[in-house]
Length: 179
Image (cartoon, rainbow, N blue to C red; front, top):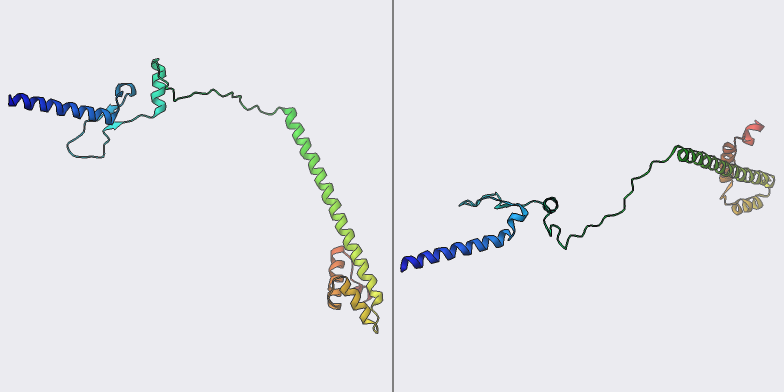
């Protein structure tokens, strides 16, 4: 009777071990196609179970024609897809013409800005030249007032600005004309 008891106990232990292994590995091993590696007595770095990725399993199930191969959690959406069309030669020509036109417009705009800037510099130069008539040796107070109203601090700043404008405009300074 003792032998029967020990035999039954051993069978129960094996069944519990199998149940535990099933829970660890999952119930449907054959559906997934996992291959088992027998565990060794000593722990190693080899996994007890080799897993495949979900996509491979789904594809295999679809190829086999298994019912329920795609689970309810797997939703497949077919999105409308159209290949990207290459531009035709007419479209390319239009783009090129547009670029040329935009380049011309940009050049014209820049030329206008340059002309306007040059005009402003010429006006400032003419204004500073007109101050030269106020520069009388005895009446420096009025001359200094006019300089400060134009944003210049003193006569040296006035001379420097005149030279700068004459160089910028490509004119000869008046000092060199007199010499």
